[in-house]
Image 1 (tube, rainbow, N blue to C red):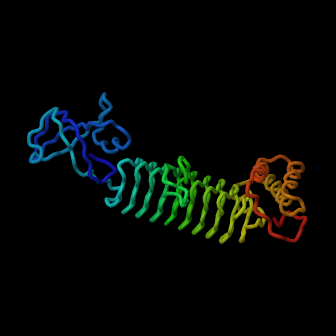
Image 2 (image 1 turned 90 degrees about the vertical axis):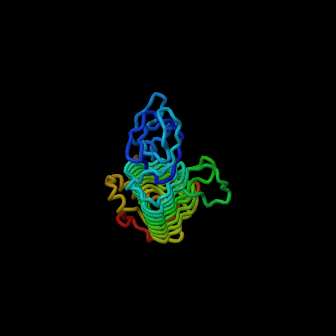
Image 3 (image 1 turned 180 degrees about the horizontal axis):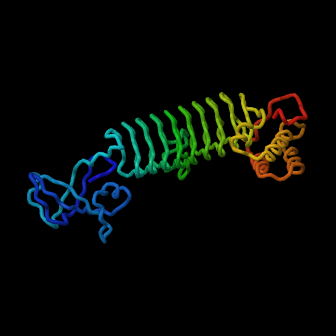
Amino acid sequence: FSSFYDQEISFMGVIINEPEQRINQQKFEFRPEIEVGPAERNLLREVPTRTRSDLWKGKILVTTEIYPEYHYGDQLEIFGKLRENKMIHSTAIIHSKAEIGKNVSIGPYSIIEEEVIIGNNAQIDSHVVIKKWTSIGEDCILFMGAVLGNSAQDKKYDGQCSYLTIGKSNVFREYVTVHRGNKAEGYTKIGDHNYFMVNSHIAHNCEIGNEITIANGSNIAGHVIIEDRAFISGLVVVHQFVRIGRLSIIGGNSKVVQDVPPYLLVDGHPAKAYGLNSVGLLRAKIPEDSKIKLKKSYKLLYRSEYSISKALQKIKEEIEKDDYVDHLVQFIESSERGICRGVEVIKSDSFEDL
């Protein structure tokens, strides 16, 4: 049999043709007496001819010394080692109930637990651990020592089934850790095309969007929501339940204890708003008209005497409708922790310093 798994297996089955004589060996066509599921299909890929009873056939060689006189219809137990897959190192430990996609490479001493799903073309380096109830999309890359799907660091967590779901084309550099949900059916969710640098950590029940970068050593506490294309610099600490808005950027070594509105640049301990993320807006090709409206909105929020609620009202009244401004307003209005405050600056009537 050929398979992704390099481990011992045992099947009871029935010989379904007469053996072919060979020197010291007989070749049997063998049908295991099992119902076919995803794991069994992986185990029985060689000569996969389906039968009406929804069973699969396979061919196997057995020595005549062990099975000297077997014939058509006889019961036979097969116990042996599965053929090695060159893309998967022989020292990797992969549970038989894990589902491995096509063209997946797995390095030395990595561990894939039960009920793990790994999409096509994933690249898994050495000493990676993927815990149960984790699913990983196609084209993801996991570097050495990454640990995905471990149990939540929450004293209330009692081992119930919870999940980590990861989209496609994500990169997890060395020693990144991501934890699954902290209660029954809870989940941690990661979208597509994200980049997690060395030693970064995503705690339980976080929701990470798409095209996000989290730099070295940053720690994201539980229940944090990060919107698309945010950039979190190195050694940032984000408090639990905080939300980080779309296309925002957080400076290195910052402590984030309140929500970061979309499109802002924040920095400090605690983090404060310094202006718009002008480089991010440029790279995202935000229209110039929308950038002008965002600058005006920022000035009303952070460079005026208005309260947050009054500033939002003025934005709605004075700034022409715009999708980016609407998202900024809706984000702030839905905040439960409040938004980070602005740094004190010299007042100016010019928008060029934002």
